[in-house]
Amino acid sequence: MSIVIFNGDLKGQPHLTPIQKALEQEFASLNMKTHSYVLNQIEIKSCTGCFRCWDTTPGICSGVKGDTGEEIKKAVVNCDLLVFLTPITFGGYSSELKKIIERLLGILHPGVQIINGETHHLKRYERYPSLLAIGFSKNSDKEEEQLFETLVYRHSLNFYPPIYKTFIVQKGEEITQERIKKMILKMELKK
Image (cartoon, rainbow, N blue to C red; front, side, top):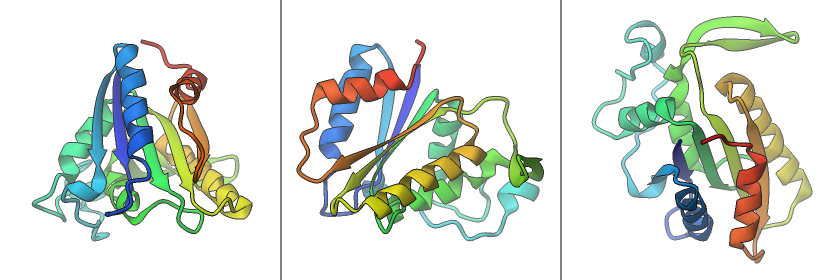
């Protein structure tokens, strides 16, 4: 099983590093291969919105050159579990995580379908990874946390994960290996 972890910490604010390390340790104990990206330490340019990844070079970003975006996208398409670690920012993702999520647009097809009365993009690929999102809340703001949970749910509708779960960690809350283990068990991953 292959895991990709996106650590969306902002520069100078390494709140998520202990969670990342605990996840890596737990996945290693389960003999799962993990590749972590600390997004603020690698060059990822913003999506330009040209949509060439949809219609000109299907699945491949040709509008942005010279960064690690395509390498990361390949890792995501080929992994079994994608992990989002992010400080919760006004109910959303950090700017670091948002950049790479926007660059993943090419993993979807430009066509749409109606599901439960809503428009959703078609799948480009046969399979997609499960999604585990862990938000770090500095403010213990229930409305902000609810917005975050809704955002992850809405993204899950277009990312097509077989399983998705959202967890929130409060500032000052101890991150134990046991808690990380429980999060992973709830994902019902199969080796």
